[in-house]
Length: 88
Image: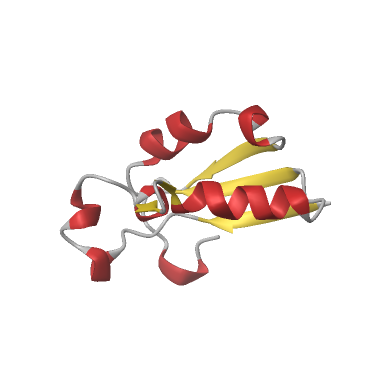
């Protein structure tokens, strides 16, 4: 099964934390928020993931890589410019 994670937002309500760190990478219980989500998706049998990125996309891609560390395969959908809620 496949899933898409919408991780492109700037996280305006989380500023200034998100000025230099993408919202999906903000730490929760010592790990990036998106890592918790990916692990839960993998446990549910969703192993093919597309991660939609825009704000500081290189940081998200660097953190997650190809997904092997989490037992999934990740491809990325990059927005050249922020497309807001309907972007994904």
